[in-house]
Length: 242
Image 1: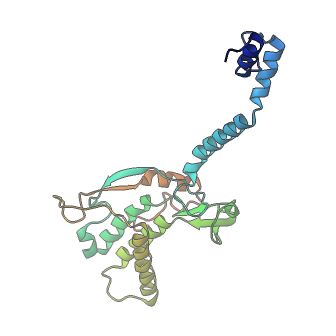
Image 2: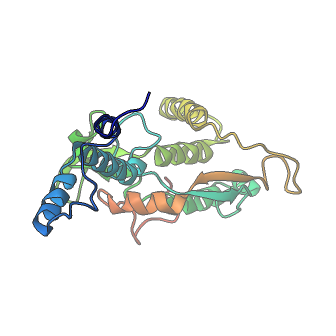
Image 3: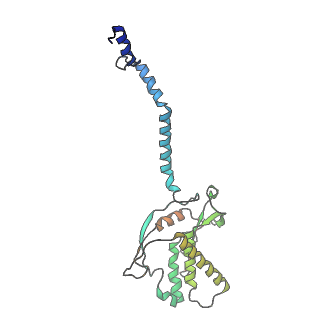
């Protein structure tokens, strides 16, 4: 059926947009500027910007708490590869045959501990998930809240056991302290659970193998930065131990 001209025009208009193209109606500068401001306050755009800002904050703050269950002031220290080797400066076979040599050798362990023998001062301890603090000497005139860093406690226990090993008759105090140290070290080993796979080396069982460890120098630096009263100085006897 042939359409007349009017009917043809009506049918064509049905498929045309009611809106004029941007080419037909130029946008005035003032209108274009207003459109730009409206686009900046688009809800979707604001949501995406908020999400991006949140992700950025999490990336910055996440490393300080990553890997911990509780909030702690202790940072995540870098890792370092250590090769396990016996160092005669800290332990040697003949030291257990000579009491003086043993004490002089164990004296070298003092440098392995922090300036305040493992204690740190933490005035803002309530900001973290920490137990009740000790009352420790902050300086020569002031006491305050403080905590012991586990690794230095472990070093003290190992030094104590080495010092009293082979002395024969133990006093009740030494026996009690020794049991505490053995128990403490056992639990510390199980807690940290070094899963390095050791193999055969020229140095013998357990020696010469590489372990991925916390950078101990970084730990010492942090501990000394928050140190309580310093206990070691030049007047310390050469047979003093941890």
